[in-house]
Length: 323
Ligand code: ATP
Figure 1 (cartoon, rainbow, N blue to C red):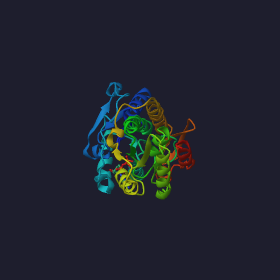
Figure 2 (cartoon, rainbow, N blue to C red; figure 1 turned 90 degrees about the vertical axis):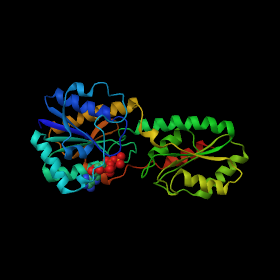
Figure 3 (cartoon, rainbow, N blue to C red; figure 1 turned 180 degrees about the vertical axis):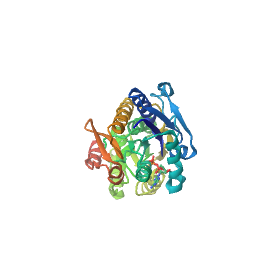
Figure 4 (cartoon, protein in one colour; figure 1 turned 60 degrees about the vertical axis):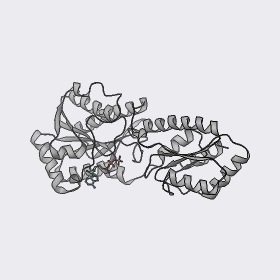
């Protein structure tokens, strides 16, 4: 490769900027020309593409969001859209692509490179951690730490009023944010999309805690749990436990924002560097992941199809430690 493009696509995640910076600076270091593509696949179709210098990525390693913006593109789902995108890369001679995004973005990259023979390297950028082939995804650690900070604050007010708080965290299809933040904040119970929750068990657990006058009760719910999120779980608990003071708090988009944690910056920097090296050594259509601190390269389609292994003993640990 001689000229590479970099884009961010799908939901934004803190650390994407650090990854863009790493791709741009590594590429330039190795003598490649690097192009920034705005608004994901939309910018590729609309020809919103600019030449990057090392200065283009100055002072962004610590910033949330993405300087390249992100978008979801309907047009890119169609062959015609992808062809238009290809023409825009071709006229600049861009012959390699780094796509920072989630599973949908990888599906798009796979199709694109199969049709037009442009090697694509994926970097897992999603707060949900719902991609196989890597221990962490860019943005997950920051999102979890934001959730933990918020839940700690809720715990203070819950303590002052002897309340039961149901806290909803992000995670439409994956419960990792809920599992991690629930374990880290001493939640009573965590409800996640991956497993079913026995609501009768939870109610007797909470009733028993009330008898023992446990000070604070926290229930952490992933937005995509089987009952439909925090508000629904709150409603069920209020009906079944009418004597308890139950409040619901939905954390929402604060989990996407903010300055990336050290872990996310390091992850993004290492992955960005290896994405460029991958393109230079002729790898294509793989995702760069890190497992046990070692770089791993798995085919994009495997990353999309396979689920992360789910650590089921965490739920047991959470229950025991909350007694
Ligand atoms: P997140 O996990 O945060 O939702 P994502 O990368 O999964 O991020 P999507 O909206 O699913 O986000 O995908 C981003 C973009 O990738 C889509 O808007 C579309 O342009 C492209 N894309 C997704 N799936 C396909 C597909 N099957 N074929 C072509 N392009 C696709």
